[in-house]
Amino acid sequence: MNHHPEDDLLLAHAAGTLPTGTALVVAAHVEGCAHCQEQLRFCESIGSVLMDELPEAPLRADALARTLAAIDALPAAPTPRSTEVAGPPPLPAGATWPKALAGCRATPWRWMGPGMRWSRVTVPYDPAANVFLLRIGAGKYLPQHTHSELEVTQVLHGRFHDGRALFEAGDFDAADGQVRHQPVVQEGSECICLAAVEGRVVFDGFIARALGSLVGM
Image (cartoon, rainbow, N blue to C red; front, side):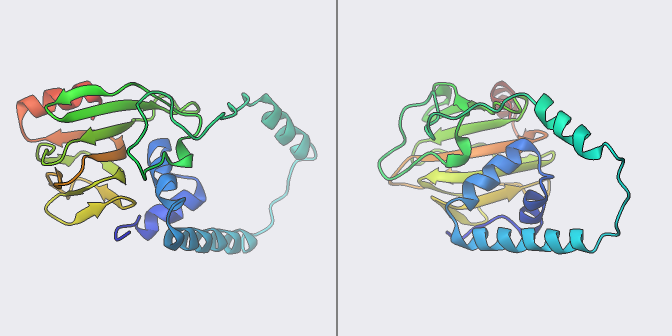
């Protein structure tokens, strides 16, 4: 792996402040990356130190009871039966679904263009999260685009080059409005990615924008 989440993303992930979709893609990367696992532990230790240094605050006499009651009132989280995602066919040999997707559901692969398919991923605890899978054939490419906010991508299989760098299986990419790129899948294999978008992907062409709106990009 040559590309990882920046420290600010890992710190926000440790603090639990990332949007659901972004957090899920970051978690998918971290679970397979020893480097980022170590970085995340460091970020969590920073949070522990900061909490220890906070001044003491008085609590109401019924604070514990109210907290336990609030926990009891939360809806039960679904118990994942498998780390396999329900919907698309199995991944190619050597690739596995990230454990971060356990309990999620995905639609069957849908046509997006010649040699391009996509699948909507539904996160049970946040159905509004904009998460999807992309499956693009060798030599195919997404139209050139930028982003209104943030797009994060984890490569599950294959590789692509977007004019900035080569991203291979296990690599993570984050792109915002300062990035304008065109991911091109390299020869030899299709490329399958897990992605989450905050805001919108801003395609250059009208047709590409129309297709992107259908996907939710």
